[in-house]
Image (tube, rainbow, N blue to C red; front, side, top):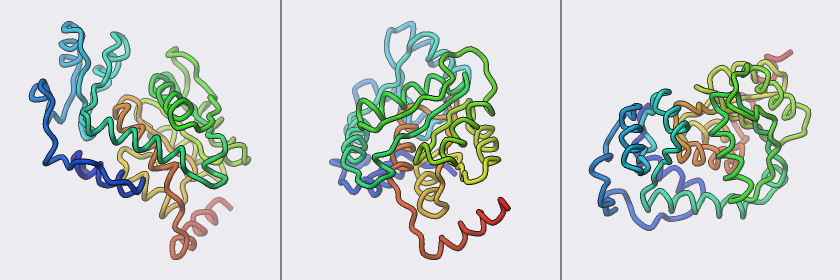
Length: 252
């Protein structure tokens, strides 16, 4: 499912209960934005061009970033640029998480990754601890040296299942393998999310307690939005409770 930026912003706005100052249709583009606006695919070529020119690169929330492009961004320190509106979204997410109440929002979040998700994991820890003031426990890995994602997915999942963490976050290259591994642990409902709609649904309808992300598939800005929506959204209960109960029954 393809989501344009305005739809993502609308969902985030709904979740954090705040009005954004402008709609995308009214937003004034940055002076250099025509070079990037509307791109659906970011390749290594665009990253290397940005590196040569000594600037960052704009990655729209809906854009696909190739693994080689993501590696090049990490290798050469090319940062993602945000438009003023997108920066405003992140600020509102921070404020919303800081004001969240309830045991789960105050508890520690267990977070882990393999080498493909290491850079994004570090970014999310910085975001949650320094900007959203949420406590995280980093379960590794601690470098970009090659490791096996099931090992770290299991650490996070077991921590959630045993009650050490209210929620868990796992990042690998695509996010899919970690979801498969985490869901082998009884008591874990891991959801691989690539947009905020899925994150909201995973919590509201499925009472997911572990989020998995693709560090080489989505950008940091979208990852922060997905994480914020996941942690902010409460399980709706009601008719959804019976369905979640049936999921739990499958573990027996």
